[in-house]
Amino acid sequence: MDQSNEGYANPHDETQTEQKSGYQRIQYQSTFQAGGTNSNFNTSPIDLLGTEKQPRNGQLVMSGATKRHSQGSGGRLSTGQRFKGLKSMEDSSDNDDEVSMLPSYYMLFLFCMCGIVNQIGWIAFAPLSSVLQSTYGVSIYTINYLSQSFMIMYLPVNQPAVLALDKQGLKFGTCIGILLTTLGLWLKCLINQSFTYVVIGQTIIAAGQPFLLNACSKISANWFREEERLKSTAIAANSFIFGVSVGLFIPSLFVDEREPDQGVLKGQILTLGVFSAVLSTLITIPVLFTFKSHGKLYEKSLIKPQSQSNNLPLQIQKQQTAWQDLKLLFTNASFLLTTCASSFYMGYFACFTTVLEQMIGVYGFSSQQASYLGAIFQVAGIAGGLLCSWYLAAHDTGRGQLPPYRGMFVGVGLLTIITGLLVYYAIINHMVALLYVSYALNGFVNLSINSVMFELGVEVTFQQVGEATSSGFINVLVNLLQFSFIMILTPILDAKDKEAVMISMAILLGITLLGVLMTVVAPFDYKRAKHQSLVETSQIPIVEVVTDMQILQEGVVQRQNQQFDSTQ
Image (cartoon, rainbow, N blue to C red):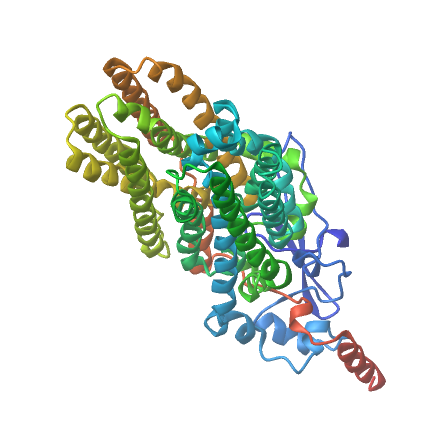
């Protein structure tokens, strides 16, 4: 038997057991269909936490009767069995309710603040485009780059962000993201020396976004219980949308666009920049010193793999190459089709909010009304997203039921089309009240996908790739489609006539219809829910992993073994 393959017990892997030295040992072999080759991961349970310590005897012990049998077998006892200061391993690992959730909520709060300040850095100058042009003499193309930079930078930075989050850990990636954001914001404070610093700073902030946005589902997997993960992921994802709303609002607190003195205007714009940079710095400090990659709930899921509902352990993620990750994703039809559907839905949101002012301006609506509509759309979308995530979290998958993602996605797509037609009707008939109500309903329905698409990605790629890998792929596709559709709609709307508005609306609704069709034909493979169902019906053997978290100090265990040997 190859002892190098001892390691993590996975219900989807082939395992073998043998009795040796008075305890039950499990041989682990993980098979991935990547390029037609099998990948064996030589992983010790201790290494699953990302440490560098070597495996010990008794890495894996069976619970219950097997453990009692091993205690009476007469051999030298393993680390976990010899340590009598521990309570029963079942008692210590089963009681998740005893774990305080305050650290989890604190980590989620810090992460959300990182997302909010990153989005403030992205969008805070957008409402000041005319002021920036007249005050600093820059072109409209330079101003537009400040917004487009986030889409442009996402493609080249996504893979390094995925590697940082999935291979090095949540804290490593999050720290990079907030450090880049803070650095970029401070560079933008040099705006009165040269506007070039703003362009460079904005590019740096854009490079930080993938390190944060790709981690929404990862912080849930590492810090929250299974039944809370949809909610926590929704809160994390919606923090970015909330950050956009804050970023669109705060310029009005600092900058008076009617101020005729350019010197005063420059001082006001600098104050806005310094405020954003100081806020980001105040968030960066606790992130660097108090943020952690995972908590006790994650550690317990490693101790009891049969209850593990988070994704691959860190050490296995490290050993699996990025090329293997991509092959697994591209051969997963369920993930590809559901991701395309989510991307089309989110593409509708991104494109509609981008060109809304041009569309409604043809019918006599003001740019101020367009700003109000954009804020209403996002706020309503946050509410809709939280409601959808709460509904999915409350859905019971413990008795063979599967989460209703397909029905929800189809419903969201159809309601987006219906409310979108109502928005168009209000625009062409200049019905202001109906436009506000219908656009709020449109956002409430459409943006709800943003709260659940990352968890769906984890659901259909469970125990294949890390959370950041699936989330990163989704975000890349969303940005690609968003950029492509905006490039298609911009020349159409340059005509500034009613026919252009009709064609643009037809394209937007067609995008959504494609998402509905993909959802209908997609083979939803609920890997995580099926795994959890097998656990709850006791079809997966209970295996407990003895790790450093179950012993106090190595010296204590060694002394106990020495005392045991001296009695022989």
